[in-house]
Image (tube, rainbow, N blue to C red; front, top):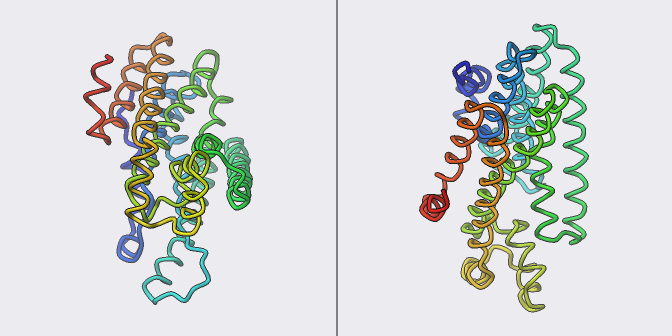
Length: 289
């Protein structure tokens, strides 16, 4: 397997002084990208394009994630806030457009169409989720599955590029790696009152909490002491940690059935890197290995 250089290559298109000075970009999804690169590199018919396909996917995903950070509130902003917002708009557009140039230069026009269709599907799914959330027609598991789908949809198109067992295993591995990422984000949100609103924990309390708790949470979704009490009462961290463990084990189990020690080793490294982000969780996980 060729060395993994996706992060370094992508930075050529993302590291600009103006962006770094005036705004912040979301992190690249290293786990999904690393997994995609590993799978593509295992198939001889596409391995020569594994780096290109992974780089353009990283740019498209980064473009969508950057646009998601744009504040849509109508309230008046300071000049630095306006500059940051404008740069997010421009940066997201730039990242989204760069994939076309790179693929066109490589003669991969069919892939342009596939990626564009996937982006349209992601946007459709986002609208559906936002509408359901506004209507309060979302359970905690509905929300979790929807966010996993949003994270994985762009990457799912490569199941049509891969063949045989690699194609089938890719879809399964992708969903579970995406689920690990989402659960980790939800664990972080459960520990931050300012990010608690509309999180998995929020929907869980709205589903399982008392009428008084639901009403208070809808009126005061960022109240630190109240939220901390809810997280403790409803065992939020334990439930999410169990979901993280289940998805991590599933990735290893699926990869273990493939006839590639390199692919298995790479999936194990990806999962362990995700788990290492929760240092309080590693001992319990290691005991099962």
